[in-house]
Amino acid sequence: MTGRQAAAAVARHEIANLLHTCTEAADRKDVDTAVRLLGTARVRFPGSGCGTPEEARAFFTALWDFPGGHRHDVSDLVVEAAPEEPAEEPAEGVGWWGPRAHCTRWLLTPAPPARTPWASPPCWSAERTGRCGS
Image (cartoon, helix red, strand yellow):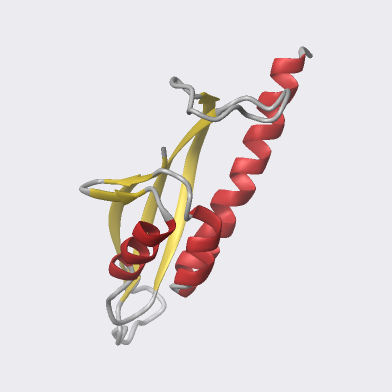
């Protein structure tokens, strides 16, 4: 394994951990944690996003401002070398990485209907929120 391949493996692992930690914060609607983790990252969703801690606070507050619970599923994580170099230099041997993933937000209905063991579908609704990350 080359140094670049090893760096890519480490980057993917750390980005996956960050993404799933953010998913847990999203499930709790924990804006403070989302800002701490992603406040300085470029976050892009269909139609919106953020890039500073102030923007992140407004973005996540608006994104999660609805009654009822929700849960997130993240899949198809791809981590590639970033196509553009940011102005600052990365730590030696680290490099810049651009992740993308699919994120599905499940909105939990406030009052699930009574169900018998054979009833379907479950009392969840899915809203495709697009890509989490780059």
